[in-house]
Image (cartoon, rainbow, N blue to C red; front, side):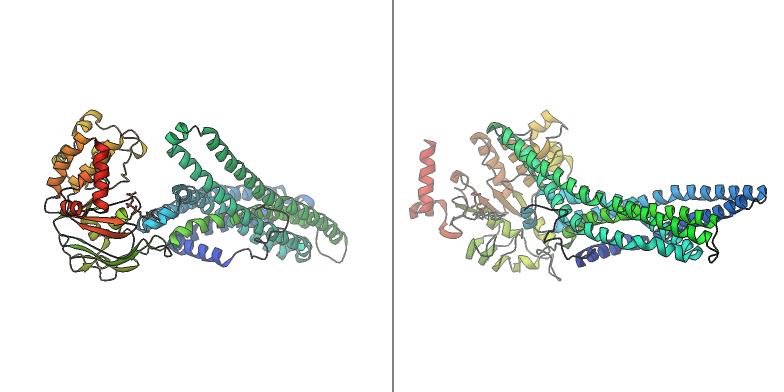
Length: 597
Ligand SMILES: Nc1ncnc2c1ncn2[C@@H]1O[C@H](COP(=O)(O)OP(=O)(O)OP(=O)(O)O)[C@@H](O)[C@H]1O
């Protein structure tokens, strides 16, 4: 869609300065982060008022000084005026130091809390949220936009309050001194209002698109950097460069458009104020000359000076207003994370008391990642407590999904997942998940040492326990070789099999009553697999173990094997029974065996 700044745009027309959503966002930010700092904010406001009064007093003293000069009064009075002006600006100097320091401290504190809340929120949101949102977009909100919010609240807004106070106080003084002249100067008010309204709608619209473009840019960059191996091997550097450059240019063009909209505000105000100055000089001069008005030259000069003191902050306020429109878009973006509600939460009377060693049953489970495409319909599965059950089947048949449902990574749409007598929905999520040790396909390795990576799943473990887990997973040798060297982002400096062994070591260390092995040994060479299988068998002893594997050699000794096909159980039995059945499993096994010959 082509964006227009100066032309009409259907999206931007007819919206007020502050939409209902803007008001809700501001109220949220105020209530959550600023209200508790009211006392400090009042202190800052008090200091700002002092600054405004300094200017008002400066005007008053200037007028007295000018009168001393014009009326050829006593020089002593002039010294007095000079002394007072100096004292006034000394006070202003002190407040000019204290105000920004205090306000930045307040705003950075508020935004630190905001970031903490954002992280807290992100950690409770459903997994499905992260499958919809790009990491770059989340980083943009939590890091960049939150930081800009801090600067905006701590510096830009405080300056705007100072400017507004100055405009009000000095205008009040000017009204008091010469109401008619002030009325003449007010002629510019409609021009300013019209200009502001004209640009604010456009700024919001373009800013929203600019934020989206920036998110897309970061996302593409993240994909390119993460996928550098694929980019290089497929010779796609030029394509990636073009893709990034296209978004880069779009961001630039949007920034120029925002600036273009902002840029018309200041000339409009300058033009209007020039008109006001001319009117005041003309009309004021006439009043000074005319015998019908008791206004003299000193009063006119002071009034003009006052007008300069009003117009300068007024310019700054108009600029602030355009920045505010940009910031409102970012505030909405940040608030939108806080508005997300997790659907997988503890029920009010969730229990910690359940038997994790009991049978696990899926009873008539209906589930789909999207409501209109159910993967499972009335699926029944039983994993006997303390026994080893395997799930096999073609890719995409739903094996990993079954494991995800046990720990409530997704909630089912019908039926029940039971552990013993307890529906998993009635168990406190943290307690439920503590009962699982998982070796999954998507192994998350942090940029820390192997040791730290293993310890992650049970930070309170002793060194002996970690060594024992590492020995069992055949990774202890690598720990000795690598020492404390970090493993690179996402464990980039490890082979697939080494990552898998870290995952297995974690399962040993955690040693929870339910063990989920999803392609746990698929990346290992056969000899290592054989050795680790022995250790895994010992680990799984007495635990409810569920094994998902394509390599059927890893499930031969399971107590029961389910064969899944497109979300349905098509065969059940032990390895021998399934072979005897001569169905899908037998076919898969024969094919694999032939493949090894
Ligand atoms: N997070 C998700 N969002 C949407 N669809 C998903 C998601 N995860 C899996 N799917 C889809 O659900 C189906 C089952 O996926 P699942 O990962 O459970 O299969 P699987 O049997 O474990 O496959 P594989 O053997 O390849 O690991 C697939 O069609 C897959 O595309």
